[in-house]
Length: 300
Image 1 (cartoon, one colour):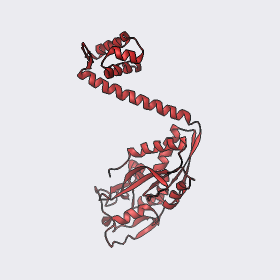
Image 2: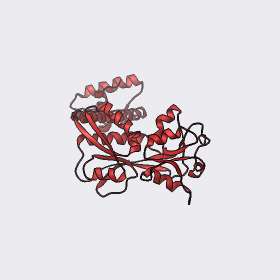
Image 3: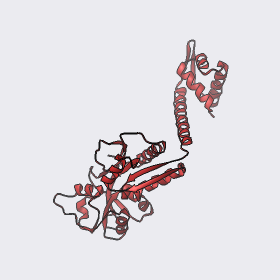
Image 4: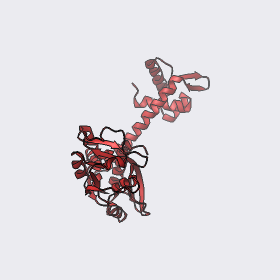
């Protein structure tokens, strides 16, 4: 097996094209480096370097090996950096402003995962509408905003934008449940449970509706949980992001059918103030959230 010392020795020889030069840079004896190379060539049963009078050159096997070595060294350095960052996070708190639909699902999962990783950091999450979320961060009350379709604001810096697929949500036995995609027009014959008009989700659904179509809600609410509860019961149809119903889809309790059209997406934004700098805790949570959200982003 390759060990850290051998990785660095071979990487330096590949960079210098010479055992002697690599030994000088690393402050070790040339014989020690040569021994590691010979041992590894014996283990792999293949030469790593071609030896010429003026130096060494990687073989085809050596090219494969050096790519693996450098990937391993980079991953090791990233791990060291992360551990060093965690070591400095002995305490702290993060204030996140968000929307009700996110607080009840996706953000709750992110916060729970973060708390498992960094239990010494306290997280405060406050729910508001778009204007309230924006103002909390712009005023410095909140560290971060994680919300859908936030407007441009010169006081705020966008740290990330992710696209989430919007779809019709209904009971598994619903007539629309087996389709690959649906249009808003396909759903108009069923009782609709719609997001409150103040929510960005309602705006996106409205833009996807046919011209002159009247979206009549049998229930209108700002509660994602109520929207899902009513969707359990046929023939109700509601509209949510795919990530909002991951748990229900996994258990088979609900069905999700993507809405047709490239515009059937919501933009999830992470923002912080332009002025000032984030605390170490807020910065660490920001990068954690970015990484988690990047895993589930839908194609734009």
